[in-house]
Length: 349
Image (tube, rainbow, N blue to C red):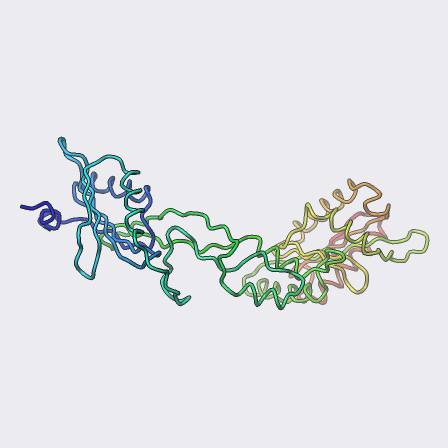
């Protein structure tokens, strides 16, 4: 019997893995070989090359005492597979390299796909947006971020993840992951901050107060607010910091704040930090770390401003609405200063 006919013979039922949409990696081929050896059956892995939209099939027959594993590389056209070459070898990396080269030989231009199509990448995750867009204009940035772009983006390679399902005939290959750049989060946060101070815009703070309240009410979470200011001891009036001093204040608090700990300033002059997911006890711990962080800052960094008082309030422990959360945090700050304490939780003084 000719070799091509023997490889197409189905006298020995093979294990056929689910089609993947990337060129198989050496890890995939090692998995195929291990499965074939364990089950003593040929294993097939169909795949689609995203560079030219051509379908192929890799088949491995387990080794015997005399013969090394037999690999077959096939071109798939409908239900018919045409053998392109076969090899008897234990060198899996050599097989993978040969597959990678020959499945891309004579490639055609990549066809532009609809965004709703099945993700097809050669280990290249789908890029959702470019994090390098300017943050000077939030509206323009939002429009730009919503446009899929791969220019200037790093595309880390990914290997196939296999899931085992008792209800299926064999292991199931997961699709390639969607790539999300963490710097996009920071860019949006920067777009919501005042460039001259680094503080979150008051309007953005109000948005996050109402948005986080939805999480609190719907999922039984908690949120807290810290309020603090600096007061002239002689007059008792709140000190209005120049923008340069505000920038230094933001820099001093940077070890504690992130896009999840929102640092802003109220129209009344107090500085506030919104802590979603924090109950009163955790917020007090945060206030203690904040007080220590500012105490360790050199006097010049904060223009030698003293004293500092921090007030803490929590939803739903203290109140139920964002407006009352701000009011009670300010009240807790004033009571903390009156009692000569660095911080206090409303109403537990």
